[in-house]
Length: 410
Image (cartoon, rainbow, N blue to C red; front, side, top):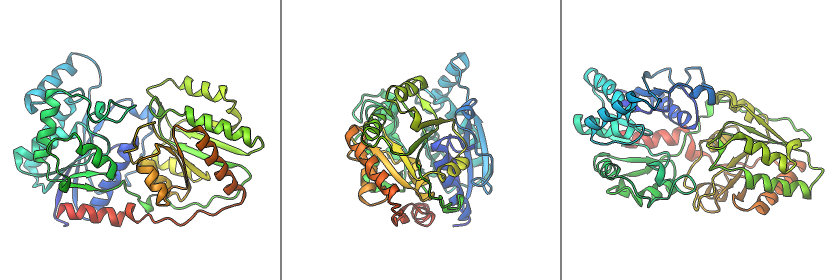
C-alpha cells in the first residue's frame, strides 16, 4: 500500500474554502496518512476567499504535493479561446471546462516523472481530465460524485431533474466516462440511485457508497455549559434553493405558542443566488429579529469552535422531491457532538439518518407546522436538560472510510 501513488484531481480542495474543499481535503489527509503518495491538482479562484475564509494551517496537506492551477474567471476573449483549445484537446465543451486543459498539462508533466497507480477525480471539470489521462496512459480512474453530475440534471429546484435534456457533447461525455471509469464513488445510496437513472452505461456493481468523512482528531470535543437560552446554529449556505422562508415561518409559529421561550438562532455563512436583503426582510416581517443573528462566515476550523458554543445544529435543505444530498455539515455536527435538527425533504438521506438515530429532530422542509412542533420538542428537551443520545457514527469514521478506499485501491 505504501508504495502506491495517486493523482488526486480536485479543483476544490486546496486552499480550503467551502464545503466541497473540506470534504476533499479530509480524504487527502486520510490517504496520505495511511501511506499513499498523493499528488494534488487543485484550483485557486480569485475572490472566493471573500465568501469563504481560508483555513490556513497545513493539517490536511502536510504530507501531500500541491499543484495549483489558476482559473481565468472573466468573460473575455481569452476565456473563449481557452474553451476552444479545451474542445480541441478533449473533444468536449461546456462552460468551465477550460481549467481542465491547463490541469491536464500539469498532470502529464507529473506522469512523466512518476508512475501512478490511480487517478481520483472529485468535481467538475476534473472528470474530463481523469477520462483523458486514463485512456491515454492506461491508469485506473475512480471519479467521485459528491453531487449530481451536470447542473441542469440536479433535482428541482436546483436544476430540471434527472431527465432534463443535455447537449450531444455531454451525452457522449457521460457515455465515455461510464466506459472508462473502473469504479464510481458516491456519498449516499440515494445519490447513486439518482445518477444511475441517467448515467448511460454506468453499472451498479461498479458503484460504491463512501460517506463524507468524520475526522475526530480535527477538533477536540468541548462540552457546553448549561445556560438559560437554547442556542441553535446553522453553519453554511442559504439562498435561492435552500430558502429559509418556511423554516422562519415554523419558528414564528413556535414563538406564538411559546412567547416566553428563550432561544437564539445563529446563521453563520453565506447567502447565494439571492439577495441577502430578502433574508433580512423575512426576519423582520415575522418579528424574529430578537431571536436571530446573522454572522459572516469564518474558516472551516474556526466554524467548528463556533458550532461547539451551541446546543443544537441546524440543517436547512432545498425543497426537493427527494433528498439525495449528504450535506458535509452533518459529519461536522456529529464530530462536534451536538444535537442536530434537520429541516429536509420528507424522503431522502437525512430522513434516513433521523430514522437511524443520527439526527435528533426532523421536520419536512415544506411544513411549517412540523417545524414548529420540532421546535417545541427541542425546547422541552432543553428545559428538561435531556442528554445527547449515543449515536453509532462508525460508518463515517476514518477507519471505515479508509477501509472502503483500500478495497478500491488494492
